[in-house]
Each structure stands twice: as structure tokens, then as C-alpha cells.
Image (tube, rainbow, N blue to C red; front, top):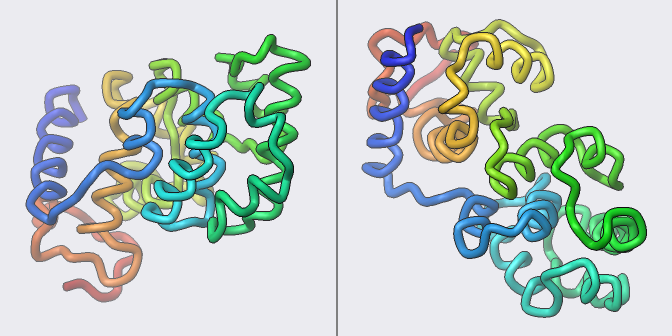
Length: 220
């Protein structure tokens, strides 16, 4: 597709999300409140295997207690656990948050590194968390591929891949960089409200007429 075609498609998808009553994903909402790489990193960690509303509430409770590595390092694991419950795997995440905070203080002067390799070395940080931190925390062009992006990209025939990691590499070759940062929050909302995992709402999708619907067996 041309850059203009990507522009037009994302504009139509954005309009569909708004019509469906969509809002910003939890991590994007946190980033909008205060663009701070540490808050983005921690809230993204909390978002893994956790619903958006739970992530948003857990992040705000935790950041009310500590929103920087120094203050976080002075909390106990139990205090963090209590703040982030019922985030998925909250006990493991609490320990990872504490460990990350200590590492940032000991090795990075209390700052979150703006380097993918360094981010990936932190406890619990995978490629999605690293790229979203670069993306929303630093404004660095990085493709963040989660389950929504992976599924929609394959369903609509943009790529033919088996894993999010493969999807990330494939999208880098075809998608204009201008869309790398906003793509994740758009496709997360689009995946939650329109192009759902099971029985997508093709009747309200602006791309339905020319979408190949790969892997789709039932629609609404």
C-alpha cells in the first residue's frame, strides 16, 4: 500500500473506534496523563494478561504511592502487591517492579534506558513492553505488536506470520514509520471494539468489503 492508502485506512478505522465508543488503551491513557518512561514501563508491565480497566486502576493506585524508581524501591513487595491486585500474576509483577526499580537506581542513575536491548534485560520485560516504553515513553519510532496487532495484521492480509515477533519484523518493511507509534493504541481499541478475536463485528467495520477475513469463521 502507498502511504496515502495507509493514512486513509487508519483514519477510517479510527472513526469506527470512536463510533463504537472507544477510548485510549490503559497504557496510552497513563502516558497521556504524564509522559514519563518509568510510568509507561511499569504500567505496560501491569497490563500483561490484564484487562485495561484493571490496569488503569492498579497503575493509578501504585503511582499514588510511588511513581519513580527511588520511591518504589522503598516499598515492600507486599505493599506493591496490595496496590496492583487484581492485576494478573500480581505477585510476580510486584517482585519484578521492585527489582526493576533497584536496577534502574544501581545501573542507570534512576533513569529508564532509551535502548531496546537494555530494556529487554530488565526482569519481566519482553519485546512488547520494551517497544511500548520506547514508543510512548520516549517518542521513539518503534512497532509494538501485541495480540490485537498480530491478529488484525494477519486477518486483514497485511502479513502472513505465526508470531508477534515475526509480525513486528514484517510490518517494519511495509508500514510507513509515521504510523508506528499510533498504530498500537489504534489497533488495540479496534481489536477490542470492532475486529474482535471471536466473531468480529464485520457489519460495522469500514474495511469489511475488501478484507480477506483470513481465519474468520463467524462474524457479526
